Amino acid sequence: MKLSEQLNKSIVSYANLPALFVDNKCITYKQLADYAENINTSAISEAEQVGILSYRDTHYYSAVLACALDSRTFIPLGVKLPIARLISIIGQSNLKYVLYSKKYLSISQQLKKALPDRIFVCLDDIANKGTASAKPLHARSLSNVAYVLFTSGSTGAPKGVPISVTNLGSYLDTMCESLPLSNTDKVSQVFDPTFDLSMHDIFVTWLQGACLYVVPEAAIFAPGKFIKQHGLTVWFSVPSTASIMAKLGMLKNGAYPSLRVSQFCGEPLPRALALKWQKAAPNSKVINLYGPTEATIACSKYEFDCNDDSDSSYIPLGKAFKNMSFDLDAQGELLIAGPQVFSGYLNDNDKTEQCLIKTNNITHYRSGDLVKRDAQGVFHYISRIDDQVKIQGYRVELSEVNTLAQNFLSNPLVQTIATPIQQPQSLTLFICNPADIESEQALIEYLKQQLPIYMVPKKIIWIDSMPLNSNGKIDKSALHTMTEK
Amino acid sequence: MSLTNSIEQAINNKLIEKHGEQILVSLNKQDSLISSGLLDSLDFISMLMEIENSLNLDIDFEEADPVQFTSYSGLIQLLSESANA
Image (cartoon, rainbow over all chains, first blue to last red; front, side, top):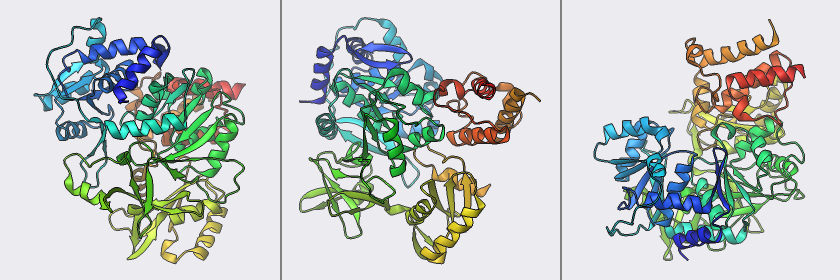
């Protein structure tokens, strides 16, 4: 069944159940669907694709539902992105229509000034208008693309990743089958709209009649209280969020008995942190998901077992979903195939050709992730292929230094960078712990014993917490800035 | 200097370090320092650690609501209350 049909089925089946909790208000499936209907019959009714300039409010989620119901592509426009980047996104995707929340009127005015031929439609006005007008007669073709997300591109301009309705449908089928929810589940929504993991939250929840609990912006930083207050049953965030919660003493044993499923994705999940979370959420499965945006949200999973005595510092990526397949090339780069793999970047054939390769008539996506497969067929992350640096001509895998330092110091968060950024001369190791001169010296001695001298960090910087970017991943450019101070 | 004043001073110092003196004039004390972009999570955590160390406080955030404690006035309130508890 198509996504739009499945969503319609949910709306009928769960009409008077809560679909969304946002800004301290609960909204039922019926109310949400009525608003979505109004959006679809507004000035955007002819549009095959729309941009959504909104954030963590009823407007945003209603606009997403509207697009999915009417087979219209949506492009989340990050309200915190610089105007120039938004202009680039709107230009590249040839967006004619932008839906915006009144809260972001000033951004939309700036965009309108730069792009006078685009049509900006205020969501608050649609919401206030009340009943839907009759469907317009204009025919338009249904879009095969569910959403387009823009990721940072190596050349500086953001890179558009279109995910088709088929890609998304395949992902959702797998997730709904492997992690079924019920209409009493309360599901977290932590991820930023420009991060594809937010699509998981929204659609996995609504296809199964559960309620999406939008964590308020100011609470995302450390959402322990929110989980308790609302008795959330399903959690999904980057591991860094859990790590900050641990630092603030929010992961005490038994703190979150209501959780029954906890998922992490977006960066490697440290084993020590998974264990801490498991103890804080004793009734919950702890699941590590993995996958690049280009292969739709996630394509492998691993269920953490606290009795597993593995000595690896990180939780494995697990095995590919049953409809997906993983292969390794000669270098150990993970190649991903299956119905979730996208069909190429927006207007960028060169990049598409670089990352989509055809072998034996099967298209594989080159993930850029170096992985290894163990005897059980479980995949383990090693490093980014493009995180490799050269120090004085020698090849250096930064993750190797990270892992050694981490193991030696009993698992703090660490990150090595090569500095200066343009032509690296040496490594700087950031350790997320209170400064400790004695163990610093011991660590250097240890690393000297383990690594060629050019791989031993010249400088160690102790920090209280890792800087994170808007997706909650370790912000390496912020670390570089810190070394320049 | 009272404890509350010391905490206020520590937060002021961090904000001034990042944004200069004038920031204190335009500051909305009820807004989250993180959501408003004045401090990132790194700044915020490191500021907390500095305050805890220098004033010898050990704060338990388990029941604390970040919507409140990430704002200027909320943070001062939480820290002073915890210290006096």
